Image (cartoon, rainbow, N blue to C red; front, side, top):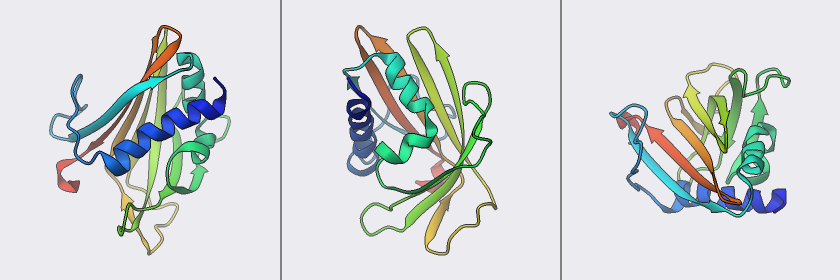
Length: 167
């Protein structure tokens, strides 16, 4: 499967969770912080887990496949590898329905192991770049992509964790 197929697989999972699923309560490991609300979707992408992990590792490609991104900027040194250190990214996404767009600065960190990977993004309070007047800045949220080999394909979970004050 080429990169386009991997993009479609990741995109459908993210769209389902962000726009269609609403409050789908997670099962499995649960949120990192039990006080936070956790929502997730999972599925299988017919591509090797290593190829899906490589796609997630290429943070600069997110606007090519992640739903609703209207602005994306890697703020950290482009040579920084998310496997070695955190990478700061600014993103702006279309708000669902009639809600305002949202923007955020997140710190991405990636871990790889035999047969898979985990990409975690933690939103943070940030004064730069400045928040545009027409968006809601997200300062507390965590997303997790977990990829595991399942034979010749990849089992992928996308989880969003939100503190209770934002729900």
